[in-house]
Every structure is written in structure tokens, then in C-alpha cells.
Amino acid sequence: MLKMAVLLSGSGRTLDNFHERIQAGSLQAEIQVVVSSAADALGLEKARGYGYPAFHAVGNPAVNEILGRYDIELIALAGYLKLYQPPPHLSRAVLNIHPSLIPAFCGHGFYGHHVHEAVKARGCKVSGCTVHFANEVYDEGPIVVQKCVALEDTDTPDDIADKVFARECEAFPEAINMVDYKGIDYFWDRA
Image 1 (tube, rainbow, N blue to C red):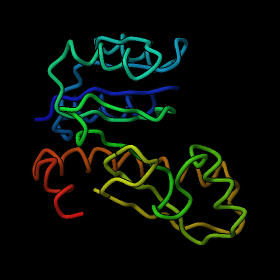
Image 2 (image 1 turned 60 degrees about the vertical axis):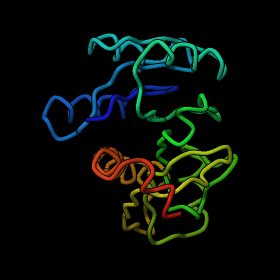
Image 3 (image 1 turned 180 degrees about the vertical axis):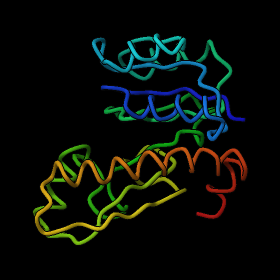
Image 4 (image 1 turned 60 degrees about the horizontal axis):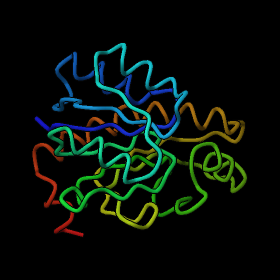
């Protein structure tokens, strides 16, 4: 069972998903701490409601100082909108979810609704999400899990976002469980 930190910037929908699955016994992780880049993030309020230590921190040094107080094996970026640089001993232990099928619609500037708008503008017939390890370049670390969704011509960017988020709720816990089972090095060593 992985000891996990969750970094977020917004509403905490992914944190909700993690918490529900941990409570149900289907996610092999323990959340040790939640950190937000936004002081007013709803995700911080939710984290405290669930009983997790929760903090606001700006910048990598401040985030890493907080994480240093806890026994962390994995860092989950759950809608964290900053390029995160972990401490050296956790440099390969940062897992991110991206709302497209990498390598499509990824990299600097492609996050959240920007991705779904680009998918719609391109007329894509499928989209999805990718759970991958993060490194110093946006969306370039080893891929752990990808999930696909079929799109209709009538789908709006909001429709696409809803479809993709539903798959994210499956993909991120699945990826964490795979990392728990196979180990972090397995994914880096095969890349």
C-alpha cells in the first residue's frame, strides 16, 4: 500500500475519487497529506473534511518542505496546475493525469478545458486520458495507463470534459494500484 501525497489546485474531484476508493478498499494507497497551490481551493476544505492534513503552499521549496514532514512514497498530481519539481529522493515518484491520449494535445499550455477545446476544434473521434510519471518536461514521463472515450460530432468541449473525467476516475486509481503492484522503477526502466 503506497503512502501518497496529493497535490491539487482546484475543486478536489480527484481527491474525492481517491478517498471513496480508499474507503471501499479498491485503491491501495494511504493519503498522508494534501497540498494546494491555491489558498481558496475547495480541495483543501474537502481534504480537511476527510481528516487529511491539508496545506496551501506556493512554489516547489514550500511544497517540498511540507512533504518532508511525512513519509511519502508517491506524489499524485490531481489537477495541480504548476510544473512541480520534487525533492531528489522522489524524482521518479510523481504521477500525473492528463486529459488527452498523450502524445496528442499535451505539453505546455495544454491543460484542463484547453485540451477539450482543441480536441473539439480538431474534430477528433476519440479522446481520453493518460496517467504518466512526471519529469521536468510537461507530459513526457513514462505512461502507466491510458483510457479512451468515443466522441460524437455533437459533443461540446464540456461534454468531452465530462466523458474524459469519468474515465479519469477509473484510470488514476488503476494506475496507482499498478504502481503499488509493479513498483515505480518498472515504468521508468521500460521507457
